[in-house]
Length: 274
Image 1 (tube, one colour):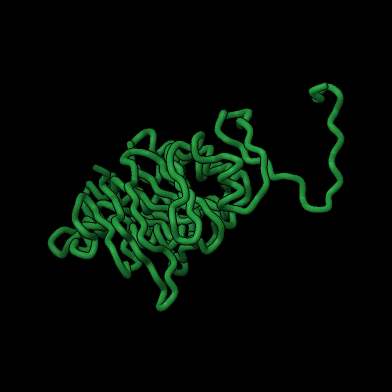
Image 2 (image 1 turned 90 degrees about the horizontal axis):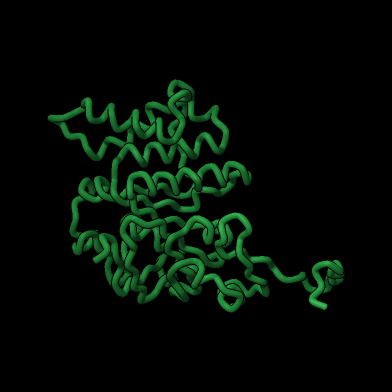
């Protein structure tokens, strides 16, 4: 049984239903990536998994118990969540921000401890932000800032980590940097990761388990090699494409078809089938 599951989950914002009757079991110890077109319910589902959004119907369960019935601190000790475009308090230093990840483990009779210090130091080392400890978060580049936020989530030392579009607004090198970090953390510590990504090729490269959503429902899920097909890309994204093996990783690589009205590119003789 998966630690984090959803049963007959219905999510809505006021009168607008975004996700309806969704069943989901997050594979333990794997990297799961949710993909789909804009407004399909990806981020909404992730928010519900982190108890940031109360279900209209159904439930999210952690270790078999509904999130709604669990104390907030208990959830924060098990599930870490990095939302889209988080905002740091003005002038806060990197070390102070990462330290806030230890709040779920503290109480009025137990403040900062050696265990907290170890967790923060370890999180900063793993995300390679130790040298930035005394810098203001406001001064950092986009990639550095994102690594700091991930360090704060890691300092919580949760078994499950939820990441909502962690590569948004980052250039390609920083996107790869962040996703490589996520993959390394999963492999080294066996953390369960659920991420929402826009880039289908990045999702196919980094995911162990891929979930494709459309219109608030799961259209397909499983290993990227089984899920990412030309038919699925057409059905979910409305895009004609060719799917070929990634020359570096062997994962599915989606090559969009020619735009409407474009002139076909001649095939070089050496590539011709004739």
